Image (cartoon, rainbow, N blue to C red; front, side, top):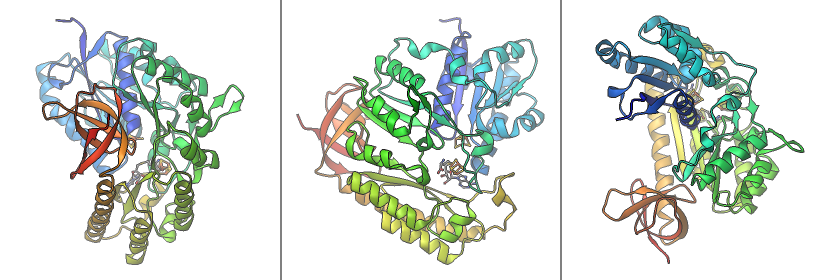
Amino acid sequence: MSDKKKLFIRTYGCQMNVYDSERMAEALGADGYEQTDTPDDADMILLNTCHIREKAAEKVYSELGRFKGLKAEKPDLKIGVAGCVAQAEGEEIMRRQPMVDLVVGPQTYHRLPSMMEQVAKGEKALDTDFPEEDKFEHLPKLRGTKAKRNPTAFLTVQEGCDKFCAFCVVPYTRGAEVSRPAERILREARDLVERGVREITLLGQNVNAYHGAGPDGDWSLAKLIWALDGIDGLERIRFTTSHPNDMTDDLIEAHGTCAKLMPYLHLPVQSGSDKILKRMNRSHTAESYLRLIERIREARPDILISGDFIVGFPEEDDQDFEDTMSLIREVNYGQAFSFKYSTRPGTPAAERALVDDAVATERLYRLQALITEQQRAIQNSMVGQEVGILFEKKGRLEGQMVGKSDHLHAVHVQCDAAVGDLRRVRITDSGPNSLAGELID
Ligand code: SAH
Ligand code: SF4
Ligand code: F3S
């Protein structure tokens, strides 16, 4: 048995938190911790939290409550809270939950090793600064080791947001928009590819607003994608999440011409009513969004469009909601996430009168039914088509492998392909949550 201390991380929220958790594990790995997949044998528990909706934020407190018994049994157990709730409510967490030893925000986790020294001495550690230094440059270079890993990886290229949608906490929890220098991203991508990664998803709260320093001035996201396209062994590129106002011409063109850029675009619109979009401070209209989708589809006709919707935003009336439903009918989504509006303290919309909860719930059901119908129809239309599949793991059945298609559909195939193989597959069947297919060769 290893005498290394054990670290258990639980991740909530978006893909950026998934990336951060991996980096935090590396930072603590250099400090003598190895990861475990159960809290029961952990020496350190870290919750990487999300503040986007009230329910997400409350989960932290109930989850901490559950660790109380564990801490009573094992007084040496250290408990930390990271991520967006840590950033927004760090001091309150320390006050409400005295068993928490450490609170670290999304921009300071490179300081975890020194915070852990404090904790080891029995002190509490709290750091929710927005520091001057680039945290990525202060994280261990463990990503450069040759340890094999999954064929897919996330790579954060941009963080924070300057858009201040009236409902959203992200500009407060993640801070201002910052883009990482292009060469550092390329270096990290090459490291990942050397370790067996074949698909990279570039991440940012506003990933298409990327404008990192390049060797010849600022690079756009499209320019970065073209540089990644040149890395041998990297087969697929994706990016998320994009804002409609940052869908530049070069990025739309890349969707038509860059073979490694996958035909999938997550482009949230939130509402189809111009009145509501204005009150949300979205700075685009329903019409401008629809025209944008049209241009993207001209460049890449088979692209699968994904979106996010908020229903029951303050002052949304029946007509506003019907406008959202019409927009959805016009776009035809292959995937979408939808939420009932949740009041977030400190955001401009928090002051406004709420829509009746039963009305909002009914709208959410109707919207989700429409999205499900579209999603299923698009999935069913894949039957008979030939697609690329990157195999990620074994399936539940004997001899079955599971991977993702170019359009990000999960596909089951009875075959002897290995994890990391990219193969041509013909889709033979469409189920509720996944497709089935057979190898072509
Ligand atoms: N940067 C992305 C989304 C970030 S948050 C964008 O600009 O679209 C992910 C999604 O959570 C948002 O798209 C929105 O649909 C939802 N969301 C954010 N704040 C919310 C709130 N207060 N209530 C309900 N849903 C919210
Ligand atoms: Fe939030 Fe709007 Fe920024 Fe997206 S663009 S992260 S929804 S403020
Ligand atoms: Fe949640 Fe923070 Fe991501 S609030 S959605 S974890 S940026």
